[in-house]
Image 1 (tube, helix red, strand yellow):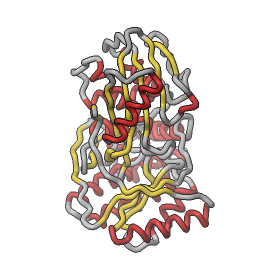
Image 2 (image 1 turned 180 degrees about the vertical axis):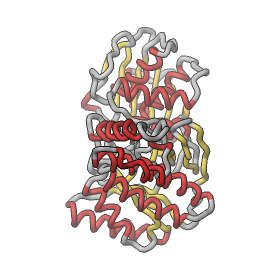
Image 3 (image 1 turned 90 degrees about the horizontal axis):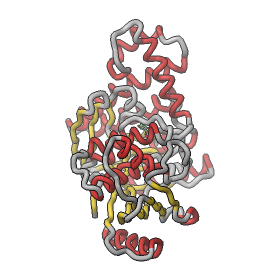
Image 4 (image 1 turned 30 degrees about the horizontal axis):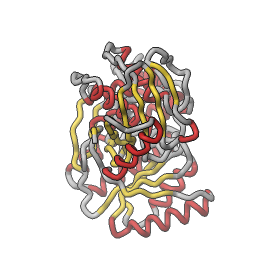
Length: 391
Ligand code: GLA
């Protein structure tokens, strides 16, 4: 991180004249191990923070101007705005994420009296489903907390503010998982989070002789305006019908048996299938974490495989390319589990692979992927990192 930090400070100097008095921050992306599309259904999730994420080099200004520059989008140049000029949903470029968080802070009564010059650099491949947006939101929150001495803001607040901002400034009705994973990340641990109460516990990821590999399909998923919001609406429709016959607040309140007993009340096939995924995926997540705690990595892997099928068939939130990645992985000896991760409709798979099978895994999956889709896959061995920091 030290090398990146120095380089970014130099970049800041080049863009904004000099680098006197700057501060540098980082917030991580996340990979979700299991528990997909359960977070807005009152269910459980099991993500972990990554060591890739988003960096900011920041300096407060004497006026109320905000100047944003991204090393990833140099052609956009310095994007200028002001603390007095932030309107939701008008900006669909990358700057809408930091702006939305600043807008949320001021909307909640936090005092942000001065503008800033801000240089951003992200190490998460765009559109990979590893939460580049959430990491930028949590990063912005961390910057504001530190720069303006808002010490009463907790890391859970950073997650809630990020989610609120994404829902209301960017128009993406996401749940809390991504922002929570970024804000609360802990090295070598995943976070078992009950999204209905925000109670959570850290679970050390001990995979014995195996590791976690993320495979990028390089099919970009864009959740804003995608089927994501439709899926959420379908779940809400199913819930409304279920509520007529059973006393629940969310789909996460049902177990499999209760769902089977009452599912006939859901009139549309698509809504019934989405609700089935939400219910079964939540229960699977609880079982998977229990298995991992008992050291049963094999059982954890099998539940990941079931989770993929459910996400692909019942939730219709995979895509043909990621299905190819996952099905290729399933055939390889030494792959304990593999599934699509994140919002879906593209992005990445996550797999648990025995260390001695990693090279074969990469070769075989890459070859089959190329042959069937014409595309190249990228592989990353995951290191689980901490939440946001000032470097
Ligand atoms: C996206 C959203 C999350 C969550 C996942 C699916 O990443 O931002 O809130 O719903 O999709 O599990």
